[in-house]
Image 1 (cartoon, helix red, strand yellow):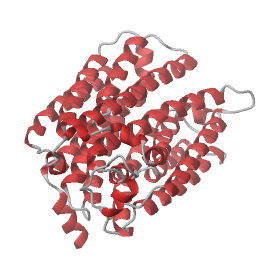
Image 2 (cartoon, rainbow, N blue to C red):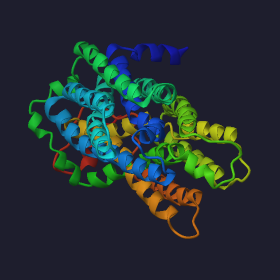
Image 3 (cartoon, rainbow, N blue to C red):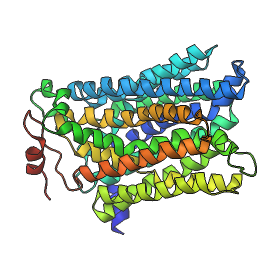
Image 4 (cartoon, one colour):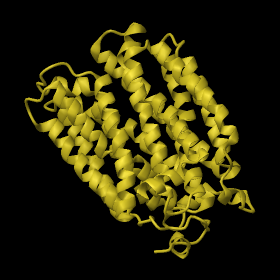
Length: 422
């Protein structure tokens, strides 16, 4: 079967190590959502409203850290190489997670999650850029799909282990996994497209502000916003959302994240394979967004759900927003080699950081008189999905694009088209 032959052809050391790195990345990102209540109660916070408030504070600290980290690691990746980011970022987030196990108050917790977020910001963008630049254009979608599928298993592992280990042990486990993975990276080679560049100083992130690139860059970010709205709001705060919906049975964040992350894993694999079959990144993402929006409305508007039905919906919503690998691949393909790592690193982290804006908007709306928690989530979600669909219409199809080109101070369209086989 051709698909299996193609899949075997992309399973090289670079792809597997990148995938394992993303596994640890998503394990650490997800862990707070799973251990949020248990860890805050252990720190002496018992009031449900305060648990929600402090939880949002710490969650936002992690997401803001990822936004800052995305900028830092992206520029380093284009100046010093993709591997330098993969080594530096893993060291920072591993030590931040080990330190997280020894915090004694909310402020220390938030600082550790901020530093962890800065470190975690470099992992995915560098991995996707390295894989995309090391594979033929007709295979790179499969390679990045393998990376994302392995990574999504990290969410499943965090959702499972976070419910069966103490929160301190869970953070220590994440830190040790990161340090263990560090040693596997010494055998991975740098991207040939990067090493053959004559002048690394041409890696100028301000090129993103010129020639229409900024609008394209913003569109790439907006397309991914529904992913982290779904995981950061609908899954992480599932107990609070369902409390006012008359759901029969108890809904826990751990189980919502677990079933949703299983769906995300399957969805990332399906989205990648589907985009290969359609030979289009845009059409695959459009189908995911449409289905995800419909399921969100079902989740928030249909009365009489049971806790089991909420978990089933979480699973299917996870599938629909499982287009993460396709999104980051599409973003990397939109720009030249000299700013590709900056884009591929900052886009996913600004997407993740958008969860802080979504969470803040959600927190503000739910405090308004006459709006339930579920209604607040639906309003924010509708805005996220609507903007994503509009942004998708504005970007180019890049499935067949040759990535061996650099951005210049002129218009990006001419350079991109001259290196595209479409």
